[in-house]
Length: 363
Image (cartoon, rainbow, N blue to C red; front, side, top):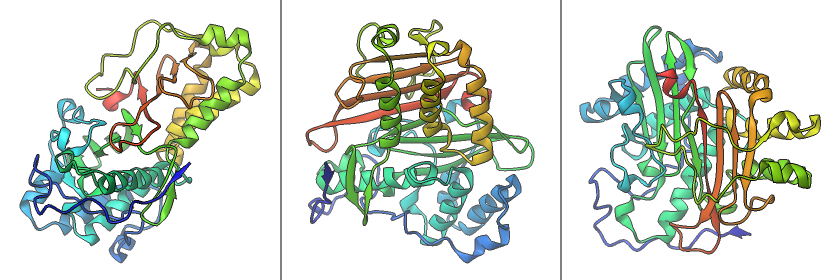
């Protein structure tokens, strides 16, 4: 079912968000935000040098010292751990400048930075980010909870550490139902996780002039994999108990169990392993193509020591349906739970990609 954009939006009581005076309730329209001509001076090569050039363009475009201070923060694992699935008003500890605090030119540079760091496929990478922003604008249009801070205005963008040819820094982009945390050391990506995705409404909604379907590709890939299992394989893959949410979510960095539970991936036939690879790719391909390829090669090489587990239905369309992939490096979770923010019937997913060795750049 496709939900239509609500008419009129929330009532304007003249007060706006109360939890943080920085919060706003307008859309940033990042999907159609123009990329300024000034980015042309950074060239078009998919290189780390271009990323550094773009970050410098952004910082030099900001004259407001407070805004620059929000954008540029010191690097520490403790600060990098300040990501959450919660809306902006419920988790003010996120670092960064709000997208809505930036000028249109600055948002365009942010867009260029994120398009450089992410995958270009439909419903992956930057496209999925925009659709998640649209979801918060949708919620803002049906909710009167200003304290929560719904709307794309309140997504944050930050550099933890100084982008440079040497040293460690993180490109951080996060808000309600989203966390992107690319960590770089000496010019190389050393960690693309934690990477959190959630969405409400689900599976489809109309907002900001487009029909949005983020996370349907993840759900559909897992459903295709689980539906391919024989009765014996399903029994082997079924986890004990049930799960209302993911385990390794925000502020739960130690939640990944040491012991594996589920069916060995080595017991899947070649076609089923291909379905698993396709499911993993819906997460890993959120980052740039070359960097995603390296992660995919690593995870596929670890299939002999990886397990698949699930609870609930193989269609992955009901409350408490849950899927997990657990390898020596890879940890994926996909969980469906009841709607929380829209008050509408249905379920919405939370999901996370963790790398057991490379979370926070391996720090």
